[in-house]
Length: 400
Image (cartoon, rainbow, N blue to C red; front, side):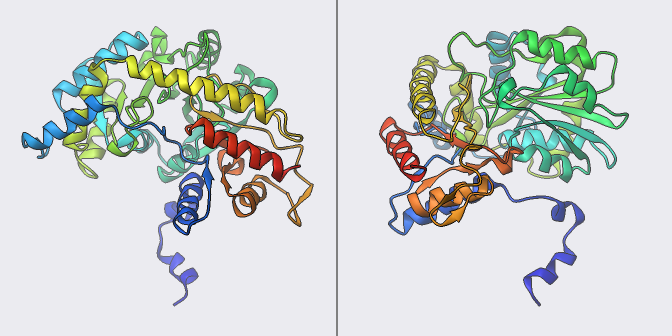
């Protein structure tokens, strides 16, 4: 039986999903490195810094003390307390213990939310460029993603007019990702309030992914829609320790939302994974409650890298960048190189460009097609200045 013939046995939901391009490209880059090729990878969405020492020690102590059994499904009390403290201290949000759930990474918090709220026929509004998993998670839950395209002219942000035009009687959820993966855009308070004004009086939930809220630059201040009192019953806040504390592999994410939504997510989680890793939960307490000096030091280093990438990429013909306000990605428009021939191949879309850069110049990027932006590339600057310098040099040579 051929591989294609097995497709008939797969569920409709799985067949409707796409593979994560970020995971595919990252995996391919690692394979090439293992083969001895000198690949500079700007594809991975994770900090290059190690997990802070105090966090590692907390994990080691958890093992030594035998904290290796099941925990409460929604998370250990001390971690929920630490999350509540973080949200109060840094985001101006007050949540009760039963309004928090800890999950196996930010992906699970988001997937749980879509599964808890969405049915067939529901629509989920997703501004593009979007994180690759948002539309696929909506499809997995049976809903239909409604993509709202933004542009470099608006800083890759959705306008209230665009939101209004996208709403239908079937709209169930709006996804708001700020700071944004992949564009680095951050909605300020006025912009968030303008969007939420459109939703007033409507039974539409807001899934606010705030995973990068500690990685912002200059005077930029993220603003959570959960801070708007009349929207509070409709907002689900998703966050985690992965990006801020270099804990991607520890897999700790969390939701803060009305308790009935948390209870529904808990029901799903109890029948899928149960509690998040017990050792990682103890480590996350140390991350959230510990000295935050290292967070600022690393944020400042990311800002230097951002400035370097913005300056250098904008000097390459055919490439145009906006200045990211948060996260650690830059999302250049490659419109100026599309339609041209490099390496004997016509660059028809961002996938062609990404594959050309990897195959011919050993630079791993992620094509914008995966993010709903076929004229862009996502480059992560979670790499050393030396690696970034080499990557830019190779990209300049590739399009010279």
